[in-house]
Length: 224
Image (tube, rainbow, N blue to C red; front, side, top):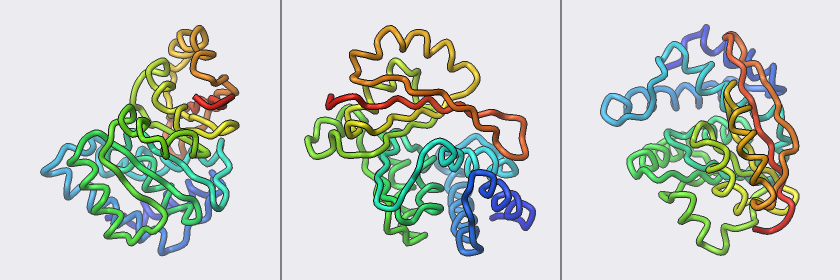
C-alpha cells in the first residue's frame, strides 16, 4: 500500500532519526499499511487518512528513537498499543529489541496479532490486557527497560500505569503534543509518589509535516 513517494518519505524520514531502512523493511511497512486500512473498513482502528500514514503513523512511531537508545537485547512495553503504534513500526525497524504490546480492546489485539503473524515478526508479542491488570502479574513488574504510551491518557493518570513495569533506572516515556506543559504542572506535584523523576522533555520535529512531537521521559528511581 505504499507508493514510491511514500517509500521515499519513509526511508528519508527514518534516516533523520538515525534509522536505516532497507527495501524489505519498506515491504513490511507496506503490508502493515494495507492490513490496517483494509481492516479499518470493518473495525475502527484509525482516523488518519492513508495519504498521511507514513508521517503520522510510521514516522511518528519511530521518532522515539531520537530520545531512547534501543540497543540489542533491550525490552520495551507498549501500553495501549491500539492498532499497533508505536510497537509494530519499532519492531520492524529494531529486530533485535524485544517488544511486548498490550491493549484492553480485544478486536485491536486480534488485528495486531494478525499483523505479527503476517509479517513473521519474531521479536514482538501482544496481549489482551488493561495496564492495571497486566501489572497484577508479578512477572511483569520491574522487568522492562522502557514502557511507552502514545496518546493514551493525561500524564498524571499515565505514569501510575507505566512505571510499575519499568526496571530501576529505566524509563517511562509518553508521546505528547504541544499541550503537555499543562499536564506536567499537575504531574510535578505528585511525581515522587510514583517513584520516578521527570528527567527531560524532548521535542522532535516529524519529517515532511509541520508537527512537533514531545516526549516526556520519566526515570524510575526504585521498584514500585
